[in-house]
Image 1 (cartoon, rainbow, N blue to C red):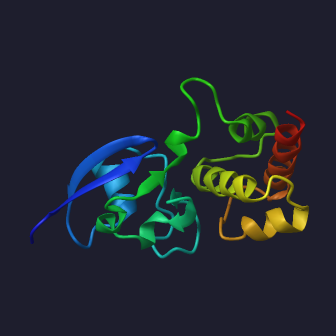
Image 2: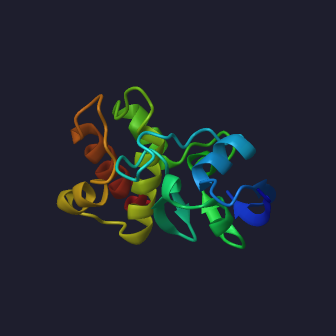
Image 3: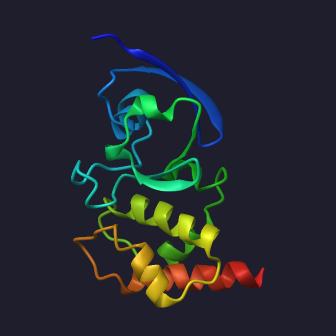
Length: 158
């Protein structure tokens, strides 16, 4: 099967890769680019562990073909921090212990970042609704929601 040459922007850097036409964006990120932060939890778009931003839109990378990223912008969990400086959401998740095993955490963080970029002052109901596509088997969601809402408040105060 012929491979396709794709040029895209991932976490601010222009990248090129070859991929099979049926290869998912998740597989490309993990296998071709070595960006293993996005996890495969279900492979069917039900768990949110592979959440990334594609042209600023939250998507499950397991449901997008790698060739569909041609000429587009992809943001992954690896792009949240700036060098050694964690994103405020990442800091708050650590401060409030809003994480457990780490499978869902990258997708939750990417989804929460997308929420705060769209709505810097979400209600608890809005945050819960926005993150409903991200499933966690290790913990309750209260610490996660608290971390998102506290981060939103901190970012508005700056």
